[in-house]
Length: 471
Figure (tube, rainbow, N blue to C red):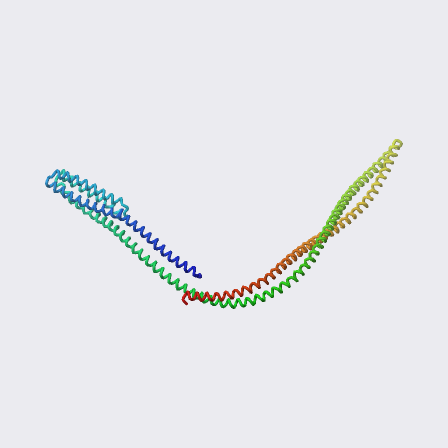
């Protein structure tokens, strides 16, 4: 990662801001914590110590009440015993109330557990106190004195519980005090570390900036010298470029003129290809119509062939009928001969019928022969028509291919014409660009002179920068 001057300054300022914000946030958090602790001390720890102290006083006060009741019972002071009994109830109620108030405070878990363990012992202790005071009032000194040992045991147990509970409460208060002192110390330490960090960061960044600026000044000085040499070289190169651009412009003008002539020839070729394509399309259409006519002729000859075959079948039937008629006439002649004179007329008719049958048979044979010859000729004509159709179809296919080729030639010629037009336009643009390059070369030469002047000015700035960083 490259640390620029801007980034270093931003980093330094950002570091200062982060440290200040961190110290401020930490101070705020610690102050809030201290306030919470002060609030805890005021609302929890002090009331806890107060209630614990008062409860401990009631613990000792109930013992004093028991001793006073024994003395009053021994002296038979009935009025004093009544006052002691009333005082017992007051102190017992206060004892319970103080411990209850202590239990209601938001103390830590260990302290609350100790309070819960102390309450049963307190109730037992209060019960022992009431019992002794009651016996002293009703049964006298001896009866009350007999319970004193159990009372002392209960007092001792409760005293141990109370001491443990008081120790926990004092420990909580001391922990709150130590926490506040620790937070104050932490604030001072963090603030000191923040100041040290800012000072160290500022020194490091300043030293780094001075070093970088010194190197930067040296690099600028070196770059200025190089820029001087480069501007001189650029001036010479721009002059050469201007001369070459002028020559290129002249060559491009000649090329553009040649392309315009070629474009005209290609356009003429494209028009001729379109005409040939149109003629091929007309030839293909005519060939297609001829092929369709031949196909119709072939279909008609096939129909005629089928009709001739049907006529031949009819002639065959006629021949068969004539043959059967001849047989019948022959049979009739035989029967007429058998009949004698009576069958002569019938025999004449039979001969006439046989003659007609014979003539019909001869005619049918002649027709059949003629039909056979006609069918043979139709077959030959149909075959020739089919061959003509095949040849015409081949011609049609060839015409179609010629049409496709002519279309392709026309399309290619069009694309060629379009491409040459685009090339011509590009060459025109290139000619314009070449002329513009010549102008730019002149401008570059002028710019190189300006760069040389700027280089001298940059060397003056380097001197000022060196004096600024103390080098």
